[in-house]
Length: 131
Image (cartoon, rainbow, N blue to C red):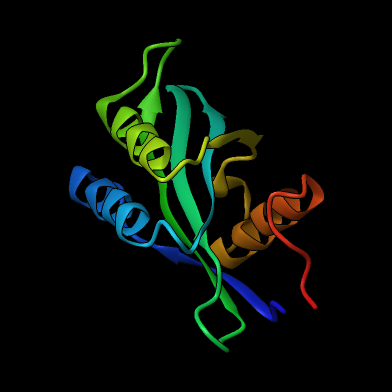
């Protein structure tokens, strides 16, 4: 039973991506899914990296850790941070789902953006529904 899903924003830099990768490796038994979220910008694609984990014991909270839009990708060349994330996901037997989204700047508040993303993930059956 999941009663609450919420984004926990890390940061946009290398250290934040390393932290996300370490969360994936050390919590591999709880890992529910990994995501590469892409948004079009004039400079290229803004990439967000995210991982969601199953609730612990009797807790009904499903965290979604995210490094939001910190990677700008032009063309098909993957950044080192994205490669590190994909390797961490693979080490936990997860293949990141890639999803194209609206950029967070299109929303008045960051919380509205996160509600939008959760809706997209649920519609694609990448997150379980709330019960």
